[in-house]
Image (cartoon, rainbow, N blue to C red; front, side):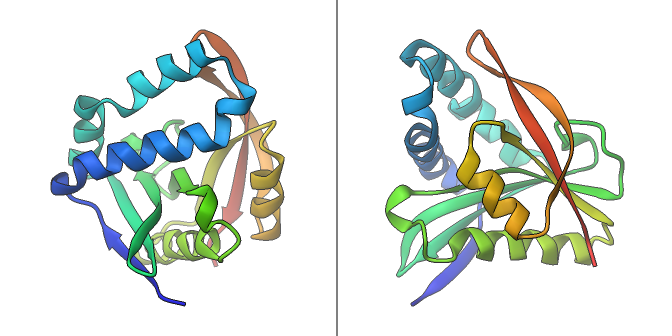
Length: 172
């Protein structure tokens, strides 16, 4: 089993857009209206928005490869790039997505470990993320990885307000 990780650059913009659309659709299309999905995808993953995020020095994207094929990606935020004010001692995992066909191969754990490694390198004391309250598989996974629910915030899928649980893990 060959797993590799690569930090994304602006040269990866179109590939990042493709995997963002694909993994978000796979994960959420069955629980949301097509209108709200399309509105969110267009807002969150248009090329201009992704280029802005890739260019932000407080954000990092990584592709994970399984047998030399892009299988998923990770987006990390620090400082003012975090989607909630959590302070300079925090690192946010804003996105962690694995294509359906590559799930159950340990890639999510691999990406979480990468996030922990970066948090330790940057002397962060906690990692946090938002996860949709209805994404039971992800919630179970994060709990298994040592995250605990510490709050909640609104997330907008098109015009529908949804609830994300905020889950946190202390970096040790």
